[in-house]
Image (cartoon, rainbow, N blue to C red):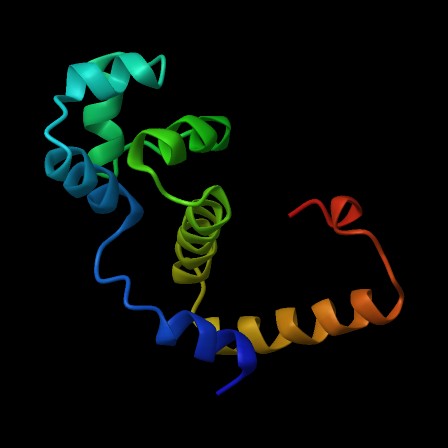
Length: 120
């Protein structure tokens, strides 16, 4: 198991990012309408996000972190890991892809390439 797979499997995330949003909203006693308004969305869009039919725009994470009182970095990590997981599911050998990605990260770090140029 690579460093990356250990990180992914060591997380205790037992829900999708969509389920997390719905559960956290319910925990805080917010209606879909209220949370949607705070995120500048309509309730129908938030409903699709909470059921996994639509993906929350990354630019909404800062607002969501503030509402949920969660560290923005942690929320972004969860969001990005969800995106990566969905991408890996499309392919037949996600473990191999993670190994290759880890090797590429090491390569880019050794070359001191800025992350912004990687277009992740």
